[in-house]
Amino acid sequence: MKLTAISLLLAALVSPAIHAADKELNLYSARHYQTDEALYANFTKQTGIKINRIEAKEDELLERIKNEGIHSPADVFLTVDAARLAKADELGLFASVKSKVLEARIPAHLRTNDWFAFSTRARTLIYNKSTVKPEDLRNYEDLAGPKFKDQVCSRSGSHPYNLSLLSSLIAHHGEQKAEAWARAVFANFARPAKGGDTDQIKAVAAGECGVAISNTYYLVRLMRSDKPEDRAIAEKVGVIWPNQQSQGVHINISGGGMLKTAPNKEAAVKFLEYLASDEAQIYFADGNNETPVVPTVKTNNTALNALGKYKADALPIGTLAKNATLAQKIYDRVGWR
Ligand code: FE
Image (tube, rainbow, N blue to C red; front, side, top):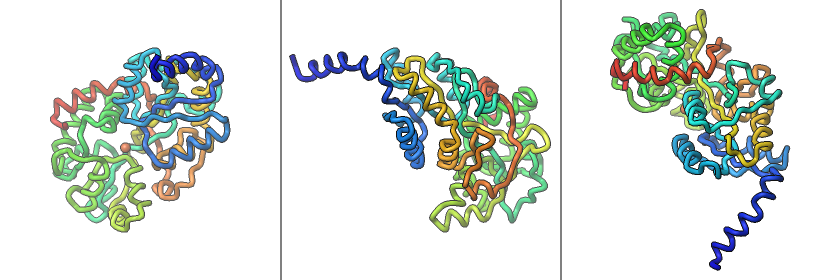
């Protein structure tokens, strides 16, 4: 017998013992923040469960889990964006998790039966402090008005962050109004949609546009940067928390769930519960300057906290996910690609 065949046979013989012990957790993660190291190390310290981590882009990970089928070693899948998590759920990849801890800690609109949000990310309006009056900019709807002709910068409509924003507007105002909004905002663009949120903030600071749509953590990253040029960009711009008198600022999430085929189910549930603990919430949110989902958790992120308190949209994350396909159709129809 060849050596590889022997080792395969040995692996087959010993693997049931490993499963029974649940001393390991196989984590497939599309998160890629350096500070997550400490988050995982702390779990191992608390539980003795070792984390084997596979990091890749979400689509690659989903493809991999599908291809691995019932033999997939993946226990937990973590990623960002409600629609992406819903897609994994639609593919039948997640197991239902009944956990008193998760139910008690995570607000109902930030969880489903199968997947859970662990941090939220607000999608705000970032404006140039020397050219735009903040009082002209209270709501997402203002982006569609004549005051912001040739003033708006945004990334592509196909990006999950913008799909999710439009999904929320569909839920609140219906398809027709949401489409009229997208069309008018697109007509107000200062330049074609390109780049990520940070590029939009830079364009606002440079005066290329008056206002950009961006998640706050991109701005906080610039505020906390070691580079003086990044901090200079942040100095030039201000943040609007939109729709504070109506539904609240749109939030998307970062989250995850246990896979149906998880070999280490006990460890997987423990890990999900750990992610909702005070300690983990602080790591999880501060690592990328996001907001904890557990309302009682206070973070030490002074830059993020300096942006002030805000009212967040309480739309269930499942609803956001459901409208994402329609949102894409609308962006296509209006040309916001
Ligand atoms: Fe991002």
